[in-house]
Image (spheres, rainbow, N blue to C red):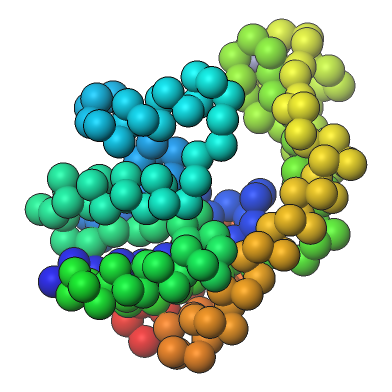
Amino acid sequence: MPKYIIFIGPPGCGKGTQATLLRDKLGYDHVSTGAVLRAEIEAGTPLGKQAKDIIEKGGFIEDSLIEDMLVSYLAQKSDRPGFILDGFPRTLVQGKWFESYLNHSAGQLEKVIYFFVPEEILTKRLSGRFTCAQCGASYNHYYKKPKVDNVCDACGHTSFSKRKDDDMAHVGERIRLYNERTGPLLPFYEETGVLVKVDAMRRVEDIFTDVYHSLNS
Ligand SMILES: [Zn+2]
């Protein structure tokens, strides 16, 4: 019986890092929507071809295609003991779809981990981040500046880049959209008793300790 752990959290909450740690600890597969998309496209499956076509035309990939690709991806990895879903479901509609998928496939939802970060901190994490244009080392204007101003600690390079959607206006909009879309999933999972809220403002190791222990409680 395949087991599933769902990670929910806003952009910048650090859940990708936690998913990698948990994957290594449990031997589960780390499933992000991006990874599923890439795997299907690389494998050249009919669904992957369909998705590639949409992306090349600059179109929008609908929920139903994401869901079909997820089913295909999970079937290919059926030898894994379990899966960590990182960023899926992200809406209540997807959550309900996944619930019926679990029922049909006799899958077991172990826990849903919600990585909580106050909005104000999240804004700083996202709007403050920048990377070295040479080596890609990451920094944050509020939390992790280079030791010498404007000089990369790792390679000494002096120019940096910033993601376009990390400016204040875009960050505010991303957080608002996230709350609107994903927020309704929290009461949905709370009702069935699988939701665990983890304070994601601490050290990576401390957060991981909580995540890991919550699975056995
Ligand atoms: Zn650098």
